[in-house]
Amino acid sequence: MKRKICVVTGTRAEYGLLANLMHAIKQSADFELQLVVTGMHLSSEFGLTYKQIEADGFVIDAKVEMLLSSDTATGVAKSIGLATIGFSDAFEKVKPDLLLILGDRFEMLAAAQTALVMQIPIAHIHGGECTFGAYDDAIRHSITKMASWHFTSTDTHRNRVIQLGEEPSSVWNVGAIGIENILKLPLLKKEKLYTDLQLNIDQPMFLITYHPETNLQTDGIYALLEALNNYPSVNLVFTKANADNGGREINKAIEEYVSQRQNAKVFDSLGQLRYLSTVKYADVVLGNSSSGLIEVPYLHTPTVNCGDRQAGRQKPSSIFDCTLEPLTIEKAIEEALMYKGPYDQIFGDGQVSEKIIRQLQQITSFARQKEFYDL
Image 1: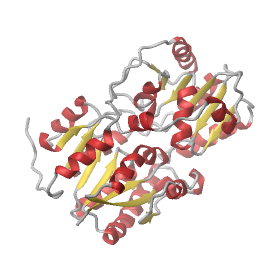
Image 2 (image 1 turned 90 degrees about the vertical axis):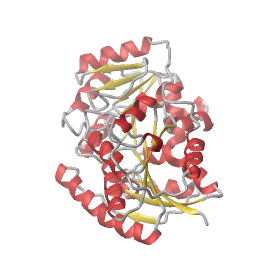
Image 3 (image 1 turned 180 degrees about the vertical axis):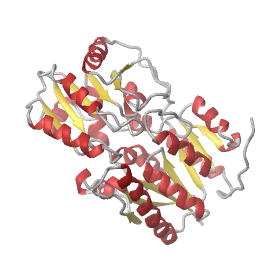
Image 4 (image 1 turned 90 degrees about the horizontal axis):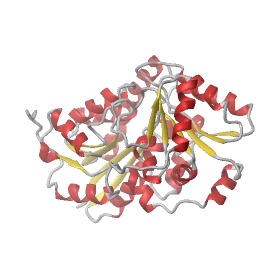
């Protein structure tokens, strides 16, 4: 009998990272894929991206509505509560043998704590990382303590998961899951991409993604937009912020900025193919997304990492850090534009789905009694 692996996804970026692994689970002779969709996927404000999941051939077993119209701290906390109620119903319905979740978002905290109480074993991807500028950091480590099985992106992160008290035999460094898409996905030609996005092919292009710094609550988006005023002859491609505290304020500021400039465009979601193709042809990627540190260097594009959201992460040499001030951002952009390499590939070889499937196949029982592993 096939064992049921339930994948939970709540954002466009997360789904893009998980899609190859989901296909591998679906095609495996040993496992049955279950899919629970929540968060931004179900919101018209964020593009109703669950439709893309269905278009890609996946069957959604349960939808968990959780987002409120408020993105205050109170609103997000209430959303976690709603998600916990919804996940309890969803997991009772699908009865998975294993819950597979990625990362550190509040949607995954709700899924993990529900599974913990319902005694559903958890496999966690991308544990052991640090992001000091967001409460995601605490969520990530909390999920590590609730999970029984761990798939990390580097040996440093594997060691950190073990340092948190996890048994070494339950922790595997498989590399960053997003690298797989870069190696396997046939990216768009430049002319096709620029036509699709309605960009000026004779001008350079910046790709900008800026999320809230949830530990700091800065208004850094305004400094970033002020710095971009100095690039009127550059295609400015924005992707919207996520649903964290303050995300709607950021999106409102971006939409107002774009409405006043012919060289700027904003997208709810580019989708994985268009996003990676845009990264490939961008002269610089700007903002504070983890993608800028992990996937972008594999496409030989420099990143300007603004502020402290990603502080604490391992960083290749093609990352240019700057504070959230217009002059320092502009200086970092100019340094990035002159950068010619190297592009360090520190997050593995991209064979992540294969490695995860192989390890899961070797586990005879997903359920295990955890004990704290002392160093």
